[in-house]
Length: 289
Image 1 (cartoon, rainbow, N blue to C red):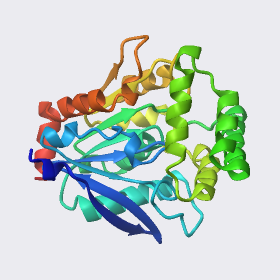
Image 2 (cartoon, one colour):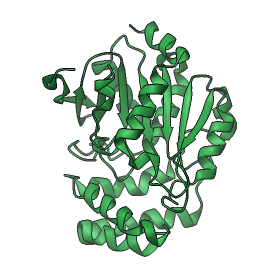
Image 3 (cartoon, rainbow, N blue to C red):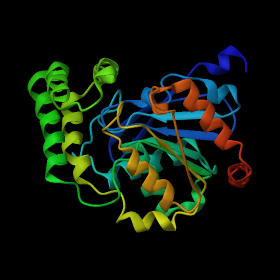
Image 4 (spheres, helix red, strand yellow):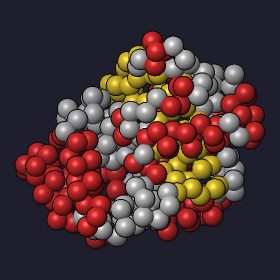
């Protein structure tokens, strides 16, 4: 692909009053990227352009209140609102298409919530780092996110990082990398007060009703797991459970001891492109061509 086709084209979508900032790169069938709770659109494939090079149009956007997107005028940062935002982006940027959705953590929960209601509207799902089985979170989990929100409100990025580091359970060999990546992405939010509110609301919102609901989602799905030594916040066991429950689910991961696959933008992009080229996914992509 020509170099000029690899330059991102920015866009803005307004949904429920929220201005969602995004970008597209490349041409071809749409692959839509959805990021995690503390991240921005960059932190799904980490700046890689391997997908456009393989002939796919990569569509990404910052969730409400995150990155360059505006805060939610209604103050809502729950999964129903995130799903409505996704549908707004799909309606404006992927009209008439059947895209592949790629989500990390909050983003994969949003993708699944949407696909459960509209399974024929997606060609496939790449689901990295799920953290819920659709059950109410523990008080310990909610306390953790509240501490991060308090830190961000009290002391900005430094306050957030102080709270994050005090609770970081990663193996010592991975701590420096985890801290560097987290500080880097937290510095990209234009509206930290909105992110703080999202840190409180999103963990209290349940994207689907129990693990049994995943069994009804009969679409091609690739679940990306990370070993707990490097990324304990996205438990390997949860990803395994998702892959087991999804009728067409399959689990992929890095080799134990390696950097998490979800942190390796180029390698993850190639895994996504290979998934997109599987016959079952290609058939569904063609439905929206």
